[in-house]
Image (tube, rainbow, N blue to C red; front, side, top):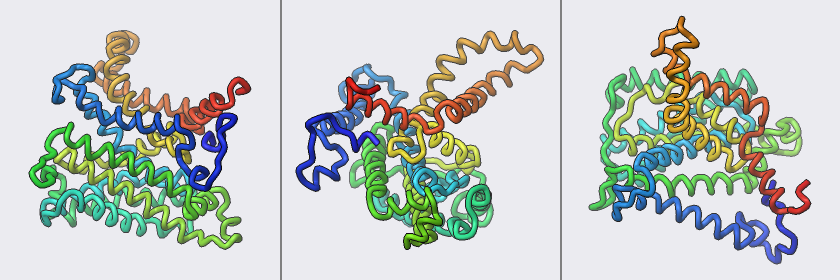
Length: 371
């Protein structure tokens, strides 16, 4: 939206300028500056080389979690936001990427920089299998078909493949290394995860600018009209499932190497629903939708609710609700607030935070005539 609107006097004189993601020098400076600032964050903590205390060390873990989830939700955005194919099994595809990466690291001894793309490709192929029903069904029925992945894949990992995955027991993952370098700490993994997350976001954005991306959008808007125009709808749906699972596989591999321990309890149906909620809140069909949604939900659940809301309302609620165990009240506050906020977004801003951000940028560019 806002990419097609520029301040007065900014004109394109060649094709390279027309297709550029950042069309003005200011946009380039802001983008590069934000990326450089993001890379400087670990250096500003107490465990950094300078011993500074400008940023709390706990924020490193929060940013890493956001970056990994952005990759997963970006894949879901390709499938749901751009192609219009609903999926309730995205958490299971993340599990495939995580466990395939762990098995390749433990049993084959492959380097992590090779494991990540291999795990992503394998996960993409698994996603193709569960994308086959999209030929015949859509909407609610397709959601039920993808929901099968959320039950079938964990069952396979827990029982038939227990010799490789440890079943219900935690699976230890080797610490990634690169020659003499060891990425055992969060600060070290930070410099793998953050650049890779930025690269995957740019890749997803560029995919949508290609012929394949335009075909995805046409399938989403009207698959019958797209087919009449000569678009192979089924082939593009399968490509969307492959790309979505590919991104999930990258996220899963990063989770495996960042946590160094895997458990099937991390990849339940709740995770798939959480991914969908992040996409809805952030804005499905917008390049920055996954970033806004993941950041908002993680900051809400990791910092705002436990550190700010619970201390304020925790002592009051037991007196207002004497018929409920105080332990149950504290445990229920976070999911209740999360569900309440999701309902508010569906009603007040169904197109998400990214849509509001686009409106703000357009208003800024055409000021003082933004009304």
